[in-house]
Amino acid sequence: MIASLLIAIVVFLIFTFPATWLLMLFLGNLHLGLSYWGTLPLGILVSVQLGAVASRANAARLETI
Image (cartoon, rainbow, N blue to C red):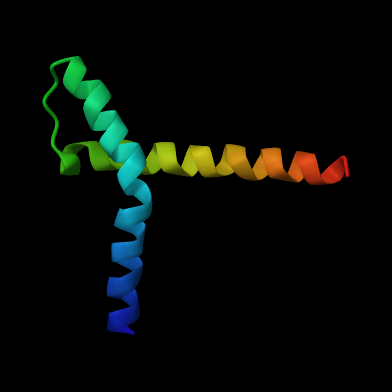
């Protein structure tokens, strides 16, 4: 159980990395200087929103078939 929890945490960090990294680049251009851990909560929200939009788009596409 502990091993599966650790694996889930690692997978979660890997899946949220692209959104968090892009947010770090954007916020760095605004000279806010946030680290990965400071940007991670916003990266999680962006990842969840992108996943929700993609699933709705996919569901709408499947309804038209």
